[in-house]
Length: 438
Image (cartoon, rainbow, N blue to C red):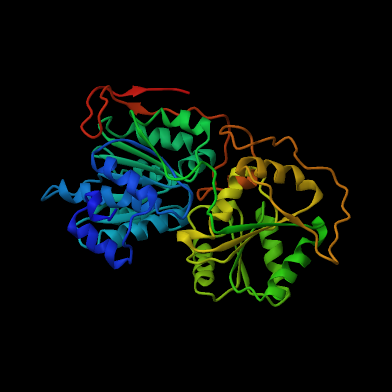
């Protein structure tokens, strides 16, 4: 199938062709036609498979075909969990809207709000935003949601999991019941699908790949190593293999900073990216990493979503995540768009339960290796502490896995409310808003 056969306009097709894409990915092929028909979508696809274009292309076409000749109210809103993902989605929106008269913008925290306010007041058709900053701007009356036709929740599971439920509830309460809702994510747990029922109306379920699957061309390796020797082993891997671009994940911000400092002392160029870093520092670190000005980017799970790094060859789990689904998102930074990639995990005795949970999730045994000179001697028991979380939404998690772009952390088991209408079709629903609680 071609993009033209999906029903996209010539203006959108021209932008797609300039990006070098000739054939739609499975998620695009399955999602674009029903979105063009105005139907609600619940879509699940592994990261790196083209989810952003899957909703951006049809929404841009809808906006361009129904645009008012004089007025430019905000009509489409994309909510994302992190600043990095917001910026990435916005870049895609700009590129794909190159030949249509659509104005877009992005807003997120960590930067001066005044330029954002000025942009919004000048008129925007489609906005990409993180929930916290967007709610602040709405409170300042810099933006109105009264004319929203399409609401898109990107990486919805992570957004809710990061503690944005209250903000999303509030934002939705300002929107008309008559709108189309699209929910995209790399993975969806059963709990998240139940929560989706609060905002989606008779959605079409689209699943391009099995839930929690990883890219086929990503190889998985596990090295058993003592906790105290992980840094030494990481440096050995990088130097012995002459690796020039590696994304390393730690569980905590402090751990990311400490590892970065030790890498630099070993004459390996590196930078850290996490929630305590300023937006300027995060943007600079990511830019330098993409341009190969630095070899290593050390990140907490805030970077597991929204970092689009072309042809990234290696991802190292310096520490395994204590939520198995986060392993999928971490290693999803490599092996994107059909490219090969390598996912390496350093596992100490305290993390054996985390490894078992990841293997159960993937339905795959991860091959473990012991390197001569680094034979593990630790006898510490598995550290599956009181944070007994297996990815279910609403259960208490390690705070390091809840680093959001706005500094939000889950405070309680959330209830999601969504305004729903009585209609069973897509756009054009009528009826009074109905709230549903879970």
